[in-house]
Image 1: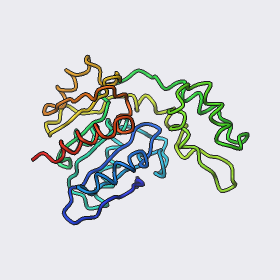
Image 2 (image 1 turned 30 degrees about the horizontal axis):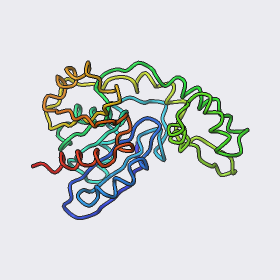
Image 3 (image 1 turned 135 degrees about the vertical axis):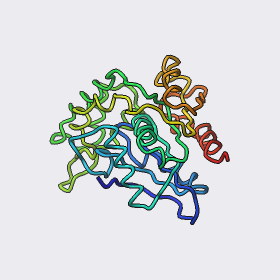
Image 4 (image 1 turned 60 degrees about the horizontal axis):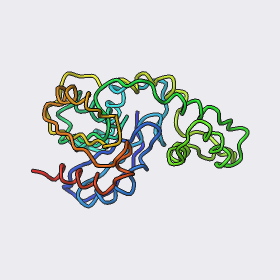
Length: 257
């Protein structure tokens, strides 16, 4: 599967940095930060399968998504890269490291642990499916429907970045909504593998429970050369909520000899 990506920075000899977004996201989520990181790295912001402008597939699992990333690296002649992943993208990044450790320089995982989570996106799927694309004429109409299922305006705005115009002037979903819903058990699953001993940094938000204290022992058992940093007052979307603090940790980690 040939993934769509945005590329920032082309200085010969720069280290490659691959950034993987979370569920319902896209390469554009990191656009602003990627331009900053491109001063030091060759940056690839990726649309994972069934997201953004990447191809759709009925199949979705972390081994498959890791293979997608490796195919992109092969196509771009990237032998080894620093890899950053947020949430679902963090699990994909972990899977790349577990399956292809020789292709990873350093690994940074943002607010997700290598564990299976309970299904907590049912209302979001219900809300997105409640939007009848044949009946809405404006994005605000879609938001009014979604408001009944998701009370946070910021999350609604984020979700509706996936609602785009079709060739006929109506709306369509750019993500593969049906596949994401049907394959959600695989998305909630843990990455597959025994352990990874490369340098790894987990960044968690103080206000988020995705890397709860109870998950720390298992995380450090699988990622044996990992450290965990906590951003004060941060939630799940650290790169958007605390971009300076997140970027300071990222640049410090990847620039360490």
